[in-house]
Image (cartoon, rainbow, N blue to C red; front, side):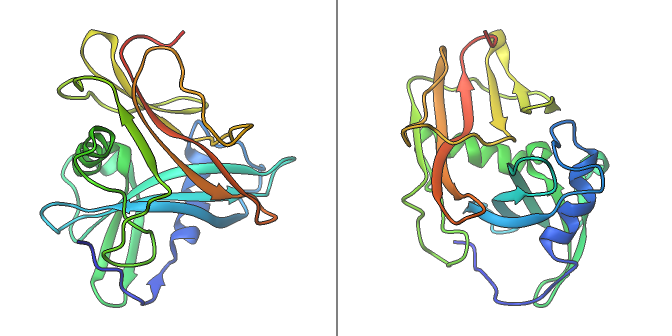
Length: 218
């Protein structure tokens, strides 16, 4: 299980994201940059115990309306070969030293563990407490998962990792609350991950984080 260290990060995660988010196609915030607050998220464990895996939800209040983003991040003790384009930034960890933070959609360890979560082979972990499952994160899987995913591509709403025969793993970067608290699954859904986050006033909401579908989007 991943160990959560109570220590100082320099710069902080929110400081890193404040610089990085405006470069993303799915950034919908103000022209002067985001105004971010942590709103939720969860962790996954790396079976090898080397890579930190976090699904961070942040809310940006810089635009006309608040926007909540899903930002999967991986934390590594050395650069990931071939992933310079996915580097969010580096930080100094009070216990672990220098850490390289990457957009997790481009990190094979995070993608593999997200698929394992969808399949039910691993459990989501609490974002802030070691060795504690996060029961608020739900998932489903209705059949065999395609083997292998291609390079992640961003669009104005999310990030897509194609697989064979038109299947794809899609992460919802712009999070939208489900009206009745139960996220509706789009047609062709093979599996999904859903969770909760908090609106700026503190109201908890739920929505889809990721969807595995069997064919092209409608």
